[in-house]
Image (cartoon, rainbow, N blue to C red; front, side, top):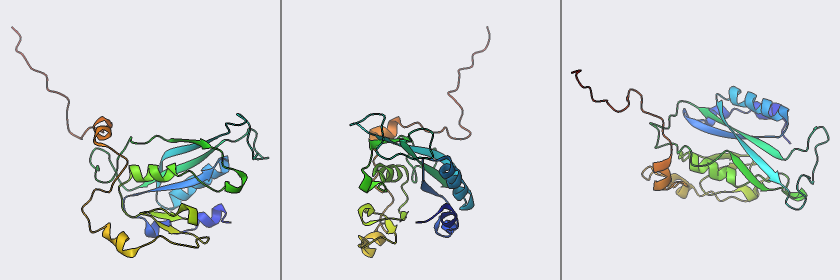
Amino acid sequence: VWDWDMIESMDIGSVAESRCFLWIWCGSSPEGTTRARACLRRWGFRRCEDICWVKRNSKAPGKREQLELEALFQRTKEHCLMGIKGTVRRSTDGDFIHANVDIDLIITEEPTEGELRAKPEEIFLIAEHFCLGRRRLHLFGRDDTLRPGWVTVGSELASTNYDSKVYNALFEQAPGLTTGCTERIEQLRPKSPERGGGGPQRDKQAAP
């Protein structure tokens, strides 16, 4: 089990591109969110979003199967901080990001006791929909988190789905990695105004 000091000491900056994004799970405690922010700063990222994972219990609403004794309330959520490195603007970097496609909330049924470490698949979908980058690295992965298009690293891995030919082919093809976005969504997605562009010109009429 890695503690926060060990996680923060990792040299993430050595594998991070000049513009990239990072998602880090930090649990539900105040310490987790504080330490995750410290990790982002150390690795050269700035926090830009906070994704919240809400775990519901449909069989016994308001009650959890696993309680945290140090907590004052029953914690039914976890946070995943998203960090950004470099300068990325949705008005000019449409080749790299698709903003406003997903929401920052994930709601699923609470995992059973034997699946406590399992994270929702939706976090992968959010990352894949938002960022079109083809270099995707998943740290602390397990056999049940292997995913096409990702390089997964973890001490518990007993198998692999990595194919060097398939992976390298991603960088030989034309840009345009498949995302969860449709043309209709792209048309409706809010976009930042381009710099220097003014609003519609008003007709100027001479006074009588």
